[in-house]
Amino acid sequence: MGTSGLPEWAVISPLELFLFLGITGLIVGGLSWYSYTRRQQQQAARLQRARRTFQRLIDQYGLISDERAVVEVLARYLREPEKAYLLLENQALFDACVDQAKSDRVLSEDAAAEVRLKLRFGPKRAGNRALSSVELANGTAVVMKQIPRPAAHGQHRSGQRPGGGHRKGHHDAHRHAGEPHAGRHRVGTHQLVIGRVLKSGASGLRIHTDSGGRPFPPHARILVMYHDASGAYEFETEVLSWADSVLLLKHADRPSPLQQRASFRKRVYLPTYVKRAGSTEPAGLTHFMDLSCTGAAIMNPERRFKAGDHVVLKFHPDSFDYLSVLGKVVRTSRKNSVAHISFENLQPTVQKRLYGYIFRR
Image (cartoon, rainbow, N blue to C red; front, side, top):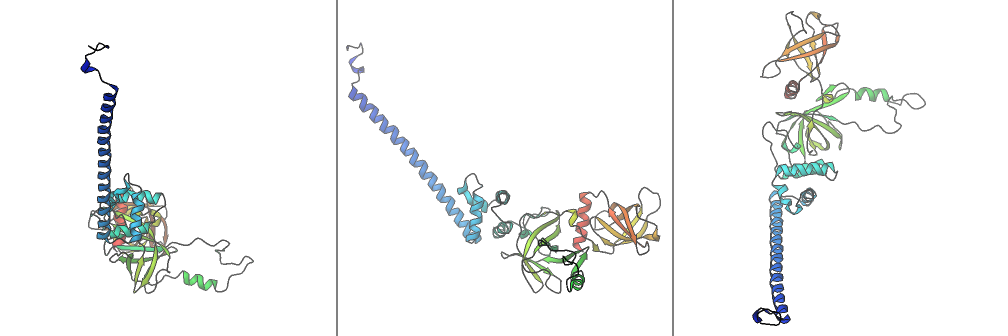
């Protein structure tokens, strides 16, 4: 027995303790280093695979440097930015990052639309709204109008000089500006241009128009309206060029639902039954002269309706069931032979069918 009361074999000398701790430390340190380097190697391998996948998809879709830069901007919104390749494979993820980037104003609509086109995100499934002008089907009818530029400071809309008197040629210019151009439909004070979508390309959205001349000046900002199976939409864009009755427009991302204020009238000849709302009198057969999603003009049967009357119109704008629309006669014209009606309490489904009929005309 040792002096400490322990058996001699249980007594450890300081040298032995030092050697034991040193060896243990080396083993633990070695294992920790191995684990760390192994994780680093695995992370580097994952990063290398992600980069190779990203580059492979970049090459596969033919993205140029500017388009690659767009994807790299979007990758900043990922939890793991190194997985940028996911943006090239997952449309939902791409759309979510585009929304955030546009909200932060670090990405333009046309840049996102060009990348969307290259990635072939579309065409959309039937009944789903287009996420970009890239997805508009060939032959889709569109209506376009120029967005007016803000008036220059100090400009007099009346056409008069500050000291009185009209500018030379003002009346002629005003008269010609109010004349509808060939291929355009005049609605109020707006000029509407009708066209159909041709095949989209990376260079932009191509629209064929029937106008006899250039419908918009170069680089004009225009509003494009269209209707598809999911509803009516609009987007703003810029005119890039015009040649041989074909407009080339910048692609735009995320068209928004068409607002009622953007409604326009179109001349139609569509039979309709009409009677006073709440009355038991038989409905009279007449026809529309023009129609929009907010109102219409009809031939006033037997001149029976006058301003202030509420009427019910029943008609077939398509192959589905008839529509029954409530409206109010706001005025009459042509010696009471034409009644101008404003629709009231239109349901979204009814408005959608009206848009569909007008755009198909």
